[in-house]
Length: 194
Image 1 (cartoon, helix red, strand yellow):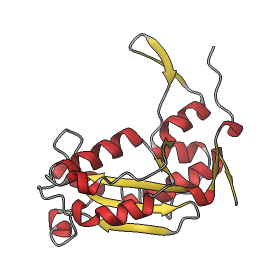
Image 2 (tube, rainbow, N blue to C red):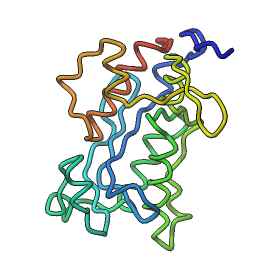
Image 3 (cartoon, helix red, strand yellow):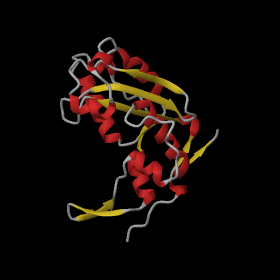
Image 4 (cartoon, rainbow, N blue to C red):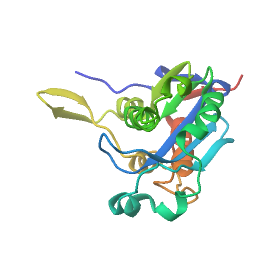
């Protein structure tokens, strides 16, 4: 029998974490980042910018995050932001709600450039998937592909489950999602002051 994780299994130090979120042009292997935000463990904004994805943002994506092609046309590209991203993540524990998705989309966005090796974005010490950690903490089981696992929760649902007031956060925008992720972490993880 699987037992849900408890708060004591999630120990982090506030000064050692950063929270990252992106908004993207889609979900497939051609999608790219069109917004990125990074905050530190205290909620201070380290980076919050629209990103020119160098491809059109489809209407389906616009309907989710409300980021239009006109909004990103004069924004920096992901390559332009490479050093800022590296500096913000350097040596930290990178916390992402659904880290597999955001890291894949960042890799895809950087990989379209021939000089990707010069712009290796992930300088973090470690990557922590808050969605997976929360699924273990929340403890809802599901049967998938013949095995039992913890059910992933949408970020807004997870916040509601933990009685987090999200009215001051804009869901499906990178900065709002970073702040929601940190608020959720504060509820179910031990985050120590140094």
